[in-house]
Image (cartoon, rainbow, N blue to C red; front, top):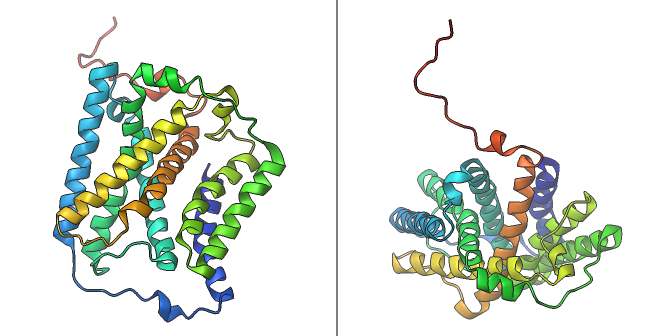
Length: 287
């Protein structure tokens, strides 16, 4: 898992500047206009999104009897760390695409608050997906979809890697945001296939579309909510709402695949190892 994530990070960091140089661009074109600190806007958005995530976890418990944020606490903490890394990488890719702008300086406090805020979207998407998945009628309907013969093996891995490389290089050359935004998902799929691991699209062989559609819808909900909240409190995020919707759908799928990669850390462990019982508060003395 760690090796795949390191390769994922390295590719997202190195391929766009390589494409940028191949396109004969000047580094000055990437300069961002810094205007003011947005500590208040970031903090308010952080609190609002955290409140949404906690409320969604409570709703999941009311419907299923289990709150994933508490029963899978370590997993969601790991997701928060991986999610912060992912969103910072997407912010980095935005330098080459200019899909959105934000009025903020890169001060220490701003970066710290941004990191806390960026740790929330991935767990929020997955807990929202859990809420959508608690509607059994919806899952049963989506489980009867058309089955697709999803390719596997080296051919599929090479195809996904080629799409990812072309997107990261070509997106930076052409300043095409859609090429850059499809690349992280295909890159992660390629790494999964190269390591002979499952991908989120494997379930389509049985015609089960529920997991994918719920994740995409969760990305749509969380993406729109986050941007709306940031705008409402004065963050001034300039983004075309209509063109951003496919990006939110892709983000939901990317969160789902990243969640599966992180979950491999708990593979093979028994329930007792994952959910450890608390020690008995009264010591027992044997004679």
